Amino acid sequence: MQQLTVILELTVRNHPGVMSHICGLFARRAFNVEGILCLPLSDGDRSRIWLQVADDQRLEQMISQIDKLEDVVQIKRDVDGADVFGKLTALVQ
Image (cartoon, rainbow, N blue to C red; front, side):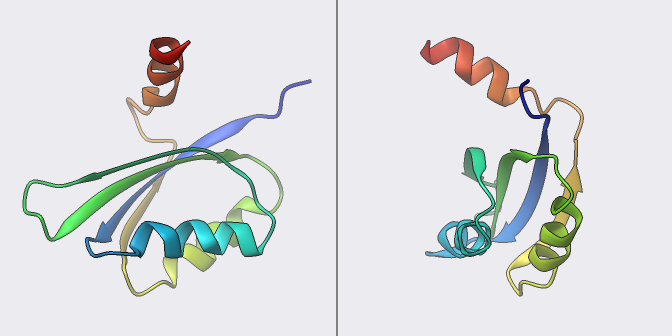
């Protein structure tokens, strides 16, 4: 049985190390990230990070922890059009 995943869309302050910091939060809690996409926004001051993660009982706690990070401006869960990971998978396979 395949585990269900969700997409988290984060808007973050754009500076070196912010993506590593966020992914490190998941790694320290042994929470696997299935997919990552990070792109700067047009203003250059912020970036958008999409994370594909397991939908398990720890997810709400992880979202709460991410929301406390200084560099995280906004978090959205299961955003519309977030099938970007499915499209990328089809492209590389």
